[in-house]
Picture 1 (spheres, rainbow, N blue to C red):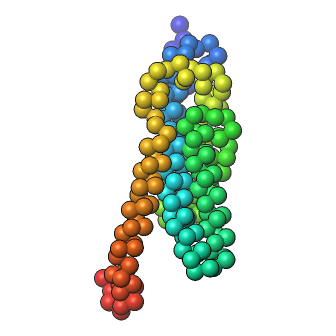
Picture 2 (tube, rainbow, N blue to C red; picture 1 turned 90 degrees about the horizontal axis):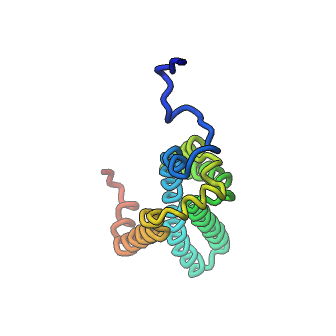
Picture 3 (spheres, helix red, strand yellow; picture 1 turned 180 degrees about the horizontal axis):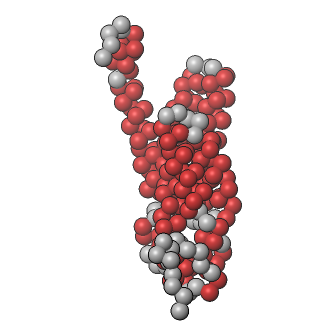
Length: 190
């Protein structure tokens, strides 16, 4: 009998997944599912958050009739819709969403400082944990056969939280605009 290396654990060694049962396959990729769901949640939240803020800016730029701001707001709105679509695709393990989601993580890195951190985390999770096997038709069928799959992964929850957060921030700025203007124009430092 061949002795196994003490440095190799079954979870970390590559296995032939073609001969696994459905339950073994789910157990083998359970950590990957969690990582993909986390990225999907972030994309859904970010997309809805940016969409609501962009709609506010689009309304303001239309009110002041500033064409450049309108164009920038419209482009940002399209990007936020793309993030929501990618989040939905990742949430449902759609094969088309895997590669664009990595690109979206790179794009997110340009929004310093918070977007950079979130983009790096999403890119790392997608690079290390979004294996091609969990984006196959076979794996999708296994997920659909699980009655508890949709119980824990609601599509609308991160969208609602993102939209609510953006709305509350907008309302806080509107109601506190005089204080914000005073703080920005006064020579006092904190």
